[in-house]
Length: 186
Image 1 (tube, helix red, strand yellow):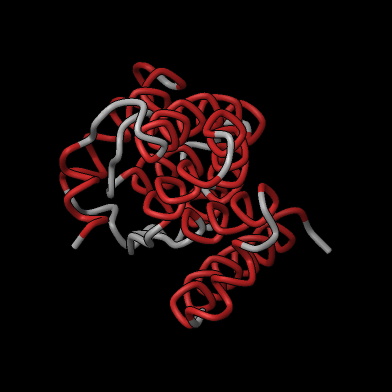
Image 2 (cartoon, one colour):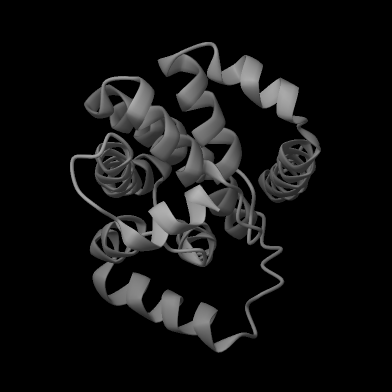
């Protein structure tokens, strides 16, 4: 089998995995989510993985980390959420790698590609460290630009772990995130 044919097959598989994970996350019942939460830090990592594995459709992973920060050690919640979240972001990377970036005609995608070409990992860090519903576009750009996966994962892990730790400490009451607290208490 030629290298080109293997690449096409890898891209199709990557796209199918991304679609499958997105569908799975949105079909989880409340009871299934409670069971996963019951697994402690592993469950937090798993839920963060699943919520970050969706592409362009935000899932409620930050709310889980916020709530679990009040029940468990917030530092470990942040670390577990960061690990799971970073691994979940591979789905956006794979969507870009697959060459099926249906968003490539949008200005925000073009801007993200420009930032990635100019600043690389710093772009990933800066956009993953804040609650950002369009971060997937950066992952898609990284995959489309063929950034090495290990490099993408290191930068996204640092950013997502920082964000998850901050939110876990907010859930523990260490400081206030008014926008998240208000959403969570509604």
